[in-house]
Length: 334
Ligand SMILES: NC(=O)c1ccc[n+]([C@@H]2O[C@H](COP(=O)([O-])OP(=O)(O)OC[C@H]3O[C@@H](n4cnc5c(N)ncnc54)[C@H](OP(=O)(O)O)[C@@H]3O)[C@@H](O)[C@H]2O)c1
Image 1 (tube, helix red, strand yellow):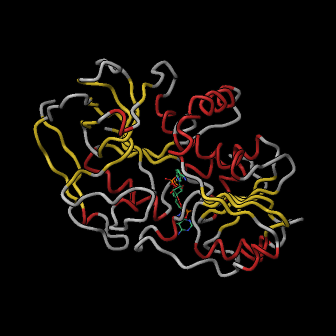
Image 2 (image 1 turned 90 degrees about the vertical axis):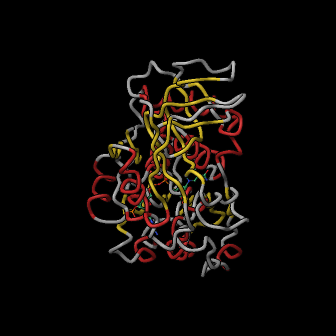
């Protein structure tokens, strides 16, 4: 291939109008500078948190992307050219690149790493063995300190991070409750993933359903914040823990949300709420991958993939994260 197509961010999107803010551009396959690596992307990972980078907020966990530059995202592919002695042509690598057919990366900034190209399905480097897997394991085991017998609740439970969090909690011996949009997802969570109970937050009274959990919720793995957190707080158990993984309910606004309605419950129930962010535990990645790979080999944990074909269809795939069109990891095949 001599040309490269990539998505460019032209303005800050308003609400769900992401497509009006980006354009698909074509150029010659780019040259690389000193220390850089050119990755021929095989798979692009769609991640809900990247929506925040499109806004202009300066106090997020990542600086805003500059307008007129390429949209940044995680890529998995083979090294096409390398000016870094640690990476050779043909290596399978994963890291932050661009929504593009060819991504130019500065390895250290991009967190570029070589990954095993001998596993049966390399997509698992974005699934069980990827950052969503690491996030699920860290959030459940370290941040929420889940133990056998706990009542665990996970929001966005049929999404990529949530379904892995459900499985990790289940492996640790917890009773797992999940929140997801629609009866199909809830059926899937109970029948395929084998969680204790799924609640359809779009059609049920979440607070009333959670009130039925005997003993209350010991640990909540929160992917969304917003009104669901309002429904959860009064239903937490004494000394409960909330691992704040994401705030999906507010990513399409300016990123800021009001505080939880039942803030008082943090004191009344002596709760601990802690945010956690995957770049903070990247140095633990090898250990996390070994544990996740072991469980995967034992058939205890898996990820379904929601695949969209072609760089031109990236926005269709991305939209699913916000409309709930996916079960599992949303990927674009290049
Ligand atoms: N802290 C970290 O290091 C870290 C790392 C990775 C991901 N995350 C966070 O994990 C969360 C999930 O991201 P992901 O990329 O894995 O996406 P995902 O879970 O695969 O997809 C997002 C899902 O969220 C649900 N959703 C969307 N808007 C919602 C809303 N307003 N209220 C309730 N549910 C909503 C949708 O399912 P329904 O049909 O159920 O609505 C959708 O399928 C995000 O908050 C992300 O920022 C955090």
